[in-house]
Amino acid sequence: MKHLLPMAAVTLLLLPSACSGQSTPATVKPGTYRAVLKTKGGELPFGLDIQPTATDPKTYTVFAINGNERLKMDPATVQNDSLRIPMTLFESELVAKINGNQLRGVWRRRRTAQQTQTLPFSAQHGLAYRFVPDNKSATTNLTGKWATDFGSKSGKVDTVNAVGVFDQKGNRLAGTFLTPTGDYRYLDGNVVGDSLFLSCFDGSHIYLFKAKHDPATKTLTGGHWAGVSGYEAWVARFDPAADLPDPAKLTYLKPGAKTLNFSFPEPGGKTVSTTDPRFKNKVTIVQIMGSWCPNCMDETNFLSPWYKRNKQRGVEVVGLAFERSAEMSESGPKIERMKQRFQIDYPVALAGTNDKAQASKALPDLNAVVAFPTTIFIDKKGQVRHIHTGFSGPGTGKYYDQYVEEFNRLVDKLLAEPGF
Image (cartoon, rainbow, N blue to C red; front, side):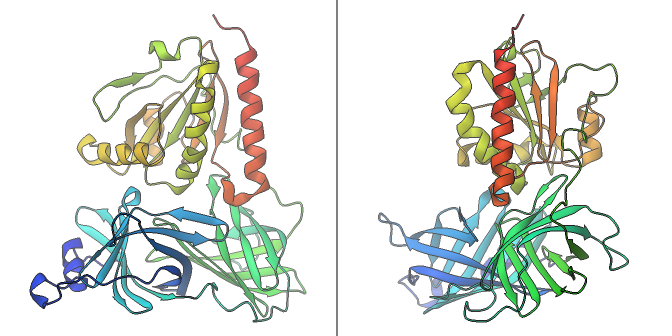
């Protein structure tokens, strides 16, 4: 169920008024916390590292911890007896009362101007385990690749629409799911007896996976809870050869088209077009993305510093942002926040809404926009040479390394070709 409490109303529930008699703000005990969201699937745990800033005792630096990822949240602040940890890019936040070693409150995310989703949140200082302590034993090992069917109706792997890649050490399990349109980012958890437990919290995506392993059939059968109310069954079969469709064949130019024509406004009012002089006789990388999209965040985290290192070679990058609203007054500030967070030097224009059918209409040279992000490589003569659907982020390990290698190899090849 989606909770429709207005943001201000929830704040009033958590933050005491000035007349409560409390004049000195509470302090947060620094260190690692085991945080939990209460979802329909049960407890969804993740890590928090909270440290005071050197300049302001009421401000804290906070990282969300998922496996090897330490995702920096926006600066956290204390008001009276409550801590607020924002993730402005995704219009979400954690707000909790401080009670010694504990935090207790809510996670909330703004979906529309009239709708805010919430889940109960708590955190305990000094605990670093995910689902169970490390001394709890596992009776099976799930390391390897798993052909996965999300949404399975039969309880069998009828179709392969994802590939699970797991690494287990003791009872600790880390990994992700690769899909044709992106990955599930950093998943962290445990194997308890013969059962899998994985979770992720990044401020936007909230994932909880549970499954039971049958060693006789080498299958995992379980459920996946996402956000406040999402759920689907899933089944996976151990398969070292499991693979996905070629990401270069999902999105392509329509017959007769050779280039990508577009003209969209930036938040500052300037229009970005294919015909702009900055793109003439240069290799151009077009990033179809959105500020709301964690996979796009991972790609931007790669592209932004890459562009700084390589722009003098004769290469350009342009972002086409498809947001929840096509109104610049609503989506322009989100694009600007994203540019600031990732220190983006290349232009990012508002191209429309994140409805895939509408996005496809906005770029009629393509057969369809099937994933955010999608990356399009254009040569010096303005012709589209390669389209990569989806993005395998750093949470996928060797698959991310392989993508970066192929990305650089392709750009080097296009830069070596003659222009006009």
